Image 1: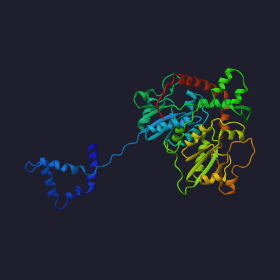
Image 2: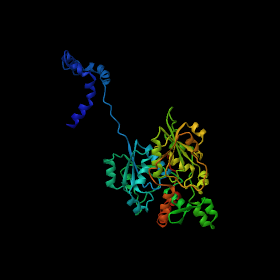
Image 3: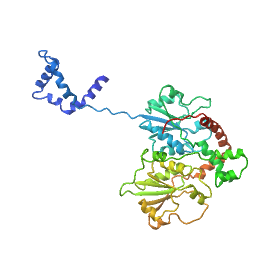
Amino acid sequence: MMMGLLAFESNQGLWNSGYYSQLFGIGGVMVTVAILWLSTGYFGGIGAPFAPYFWPYLAQLPKKKERKRPVRVYMDGCFDLMHYGHANALRQAKLLGDQLVVGVVSDEEIVANKGPPVLSMEERLTLVSGLKWVDEVIPNAPYEITEEFMDTLFNKYNIDYIIHGDDPCLLPDGTDAYALAKKVGRYKQIKRTEGVSSTDIVGRILLTFKQKEAGSMEATTDANVAVNQNTGADTYDKVKSQLSNFLPTSRRIMQFSNGQLICTQAPLPGARVVYIDGAFDLFHAGHVEILRSARQLGDFLLVGVHDDQAIRDRRGYRPIMHLHERTLSVLACRYVDEVIIGAPWEVSRDMITTFNISLVVHGTVTEGSSVVGIDPYAVPKSMGIFQTITSPKPITTVSVATRIIDNHEAYKKRNLKKKASEDRYYTQKKFVSGD
């Protein structure tokens, strides 16, 4: 019965095209007899040799186009303290298929396998969903790809391949978390992004901030200052190991732009360009939500990312993530169209004219400033193009850092455990081709 239905469906193009409609009515019977005579020799047995002359015409009859199913790939992770390394991994995963489905590991699974997460599930979902390469998100995914979950991925979510980086992902018992996917031949590997990890960022936070008193934070001005204030080779090596190892390239910035492999698109003529600026340090869910709100106010969102020195001059300490790291995190956000790298602190009239800015916005939740200066938005306010928008989430970089400081011992243990694993990876690593 099913074969009959399929055959009927595949021939609908013939029936709908009008060719066979001519077989009915006056003369239809004569045409039918002629086809039988030419193709089968039913009348006289001499028709078969003539049939090939009609085959080219029959090939021109319209056929129903078959729609190719998109290739769906799956990648999971904790995505705690979301950084450009996570974003680059998902960008690479998307290149291996048409649709990217991302699993966000549950809080309970993170605790059992790595230690306490810094960000809540809701915050991590906001960050992952806000990435331009992600098509679908699965919350509370398991840390291990079990046979049951793998069947769910293949049958419910129509996943073709499971993706992970070239760094090992081991369970507490030392076994490979992706062993089953590899066994069935549905596993693909991408290249790990060098120079950053959640473990590394926790280390930077613990190095940069120290608890002054309950409810407040004090920061060292710079990691190098911390080195100079301490003595001993062990201390120096410990501090040096927490400095950023990221090597920025123009290619990486182009990959993170809207075109992925080409430069960002310019705004169309007459487009309403909205501008928002900030440090965007420790890129978090609050950043994603304020960028979403800003984008809804126009057609093109231009984001200014302040440089490290400008932030230090006004806040008294350097950002945890340096300028190029913060730029990539902002570029990866699906609501961002273009970024000014090292944007000026003050929004000038020349800048507004150069970028054809229609509206300058700023959120209600901002990082504290230790330096009182002139209003950076004085010019757009005088021009009547400034607007304060309500920040959807009360999260700040310092509030995220405070979570780690308040649980210093727990995160210190977590880092020691993960650092040993990362040290082994870097010691044994070999070149892996990838993008």
